[in-house]
Length: 86
Image 1 (spheres, rainbow, N blue to C red):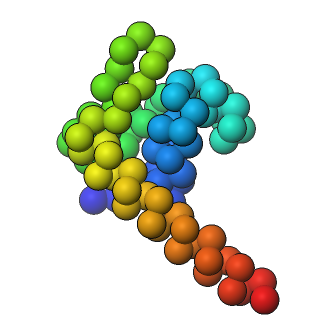
Image 2 (image 1 turned 120 degrees about the horizontal axis):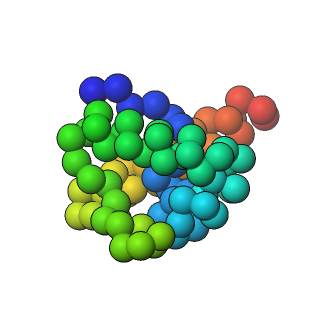
């Protein structure tokens, strides 16, 4: 399995922003690039992270599990970055 840090940020941001368009703006990506990264991640995991309802995205059961891990990992990375700066 090949999961990168940007995948954790991607799921965290999409879940908070609610749409690919808003998340793409937050991450400073095009919607197309973000959509491609999400499809790539879902293919790598073999699951649908989000259930799609029009333009709205809702986390699937497996997506919630991934998000919980993402939040922990991103918080730990932020803490590490702060420790290194100090």
